[in-house]
Length: 197
Image (tube, rainbow, N blue to C red; front, side, top):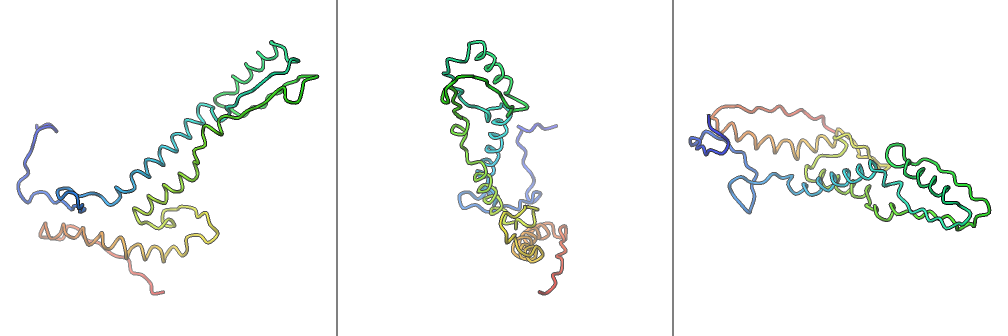
């Protein structure tokens, strides 16, 4: 049995390669979706960052600046333990601090997570989604994507008809090259009939 690292020469005419042409090299070609890979990876990175961000409790992060002399060291330690317990699952717990006679600015809450993690998550997700959709040229209404505007995506049957005419049928025609290579009809497609508008 041959291993994956051992070279093998296929007999001439035994392999059919339906390549997608590339101007930079002429052996293998490049898939048409390759231009959208960076957007897909950015979408994944944004999702992974947000998952880790929430999983580690950093979204509850802040600096608690306590300068009021009315709060004893024991109270400050109790407050510190309560804050430690708020990290992880079950975040956004409420804390109560009683400081009679304290000044209004004796306790300050300074959020840091909003500044450090300003990643514009929704914008990244939307732009990268649009890039991937554009690369595959699939109408979003056919993928079950919920429209974000009041107008929606228009008439789904019309979008499907245009998609079949402009994308599916040319792809089917390319696959018919396999029939020519094999000398018989290996690939056969039935194109659904469209009703006239």
